[in-house]
Image (cartoon, rainbow, N blue to C red; front, side, top):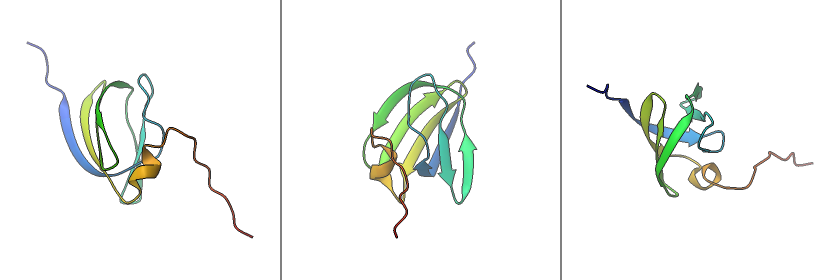
Length: 81
């Protein structure tokens, strides 16, 4: 019998792009979590992401900056003078 993967329901934000074959960084309450490699992406919109890694199914509510988290463009911080 095949072992069931763990399911996590979280509220946070993506700190790295969500890409098949690469791990993801997730920020939750000031802590940064590093996932195993992403194997599937099931749902992605401006409020929610559901993806699967080698070990876990993640259901992530994107707060407080959902649009920046799913942006396909690289985001860099800029200093104001």
